[in-house]
Image (cartoon, rainbow, N blue to C red; front, side, top):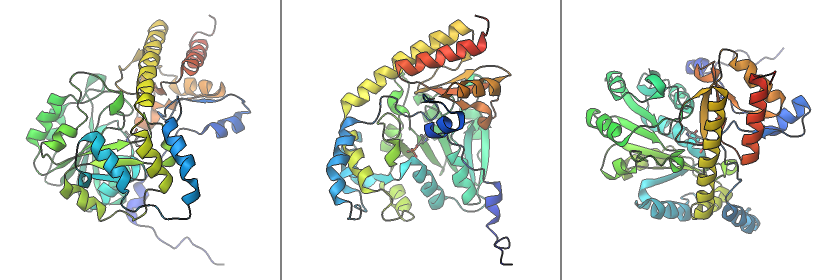
Length: 369
Ligand SMILES: *Cc1c(COP(=O)(O)O)cnc(C)c1O
């Protein structure tokens, strides 16, 4: 009998956990036989994609026999103009997820260490693990606040990268400008990956999107995505901004055609769609305040968010509440993946979605009401 079981993978694959995405709508519909399913689990834009991006895609379909532009020249120029940097400081990738992998491939040797505030986005760990590098998690303080001293204390000779996700997924908390200055003042020859996937939602006065530190010459790379406020998660497009040297190193490990034509075209249109971005921002603030209010009424503790999702403490029967919401066709994220079994993370939805979610949650928590 032929068999494949003696084909050995690299050892480092043994510690890789499969990514657990939010369940897709069709799957829940099928599994539970439900017509109406709403997804508040992946921090997508509930208003839909940028209409400008959709139009741009429709107009470009006839050219799909051609390979994409390997340099994504038009898009990188558009990004450079929007963020007031040089085009050579921009790399575009198949989602910010790919950029995390490319950064890992470019900078991590086996045995190197990365520092990751915990809990945060799981792709940072994934990138380290595929390279045989070691993840040093540093827990957040009370209320999931950044503690810079603790991050600094975790640094060793082997530290190559410190990840800062701000606003942080899944907590919604952020690093202040002052904290970032403090961190950079104390690090030496360590790359800081500043993941700003949700930065367009943050409007706190002491918030930084990280760019000023790139511009000041620090070894910082800012990660960005078109999957969140721009609403085009389905075409997969993200980008990074850093010094030209850092970008050059990452380009060495990039596949030539990593960003497909539709993604390039859609993103170049979406970045100019200020109307859609503003509408999305405003809807998010309104939805956030409605949800805060509803959680207050239900006596639930939540972490104030600077993003488009809220981490809510629902109690020791968190998994049961998650399942009951699912049974009613409402997909949220259960906190156990982040070691937070008493929590759920809910993406702020449309007014209707937020209403349905609150109604369902209220019924679950107060069955006799
Ligand atoms: C969603 C997300 C990303 C990027 O996602 P892509 O769809 O791969 O661009 C990056 N970082 C965080 C923290 C996210 O939540």
